[in-house]
Length: 417
Image (cartoon, rainbow, N blue to C red; front, side, top):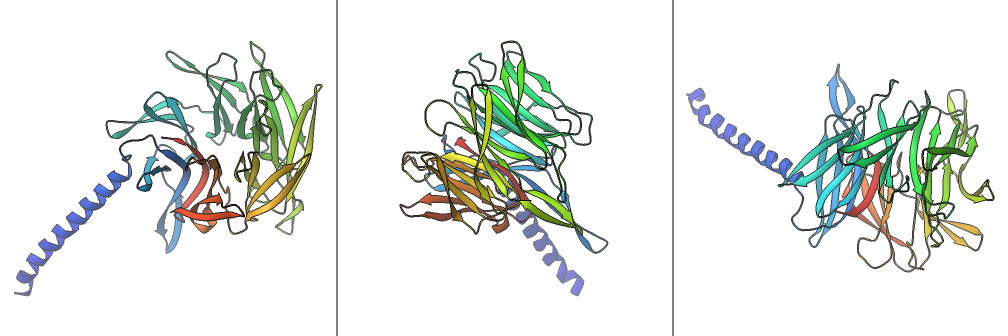
């Protein structure tokens, strides 16, 4: 009798469980659907996620599908949607592409190295593989990407930096698709970032990259360079801007800081370290440098130092409403910092000491449209996506969304989508 009575309970439980699974499935589908209307101000969060499994009584993490969250500011508030790509285990960066009324996002992935275009139409995501190189080394990673005219034809090109064969490539849009050309390659070299800007004011953009020896889990010399490429009409001329023997720069920034129509190049040189008894010891602090190009000579001056091991994001814009652009530096452990220039000197002040992360991804955007940029920060250690807004005296902090503890945020980018 007990068994007979239990059958209806089992059936009911199965029905409830099925409804629960169906509900969860619908929720997952909804996470991939964009809100109607738009375009809306958006922040793209490019991440790696880790999945956990128990093995021999131990909780082990393994890389999951590459994941990107699109945060859109609608009239109802912030709305998030998600793209996952099981063909890569990390999105290193995503860029919104302007193409009429279509909604397109360019992404770079790693392990496999894939350049993809994502388009939202017919209430679903559609992807197009644009480039999938195999470099022949240990890693196949597309590490950074920027768009801009670097060939002087008035059309936006795609400049890509890769690990681990030191490949720098330029993709030119053609009627049949992309024509991707390697313009540099160096075995055993990691190229970390790309920046585009007109440094000499001739109306033609140069672009810059940051190659170095491979990353190290522990300290010690990791020499690197900052390299400039300039289109000559037939090919790219290569110039070494800074040759760093004991450390390297991963983060660079080309920005029209004076509003005069030409860009200034900045770099963040990572702390010089050595190993002692298995420990990493800092010898020199993080240094932020500004470069001048005059009469064929390149000079790099240190404008600030940070008591930290690394600083992977340096952004620029008017964040305090004074009509002039400032620099925002996001260091790994010491917080977010503001650099303001007064005449020929730069003053450094702390925005928030309680914000940190391995990459500490940061971007600036004027989402509310008041003419003053907000600061958007992925505070991975605090598991929060934050927005900082100048209130006239200091920066107020607001939490936009939670960041799961199984994520590493590699980049934040902004635009309308």
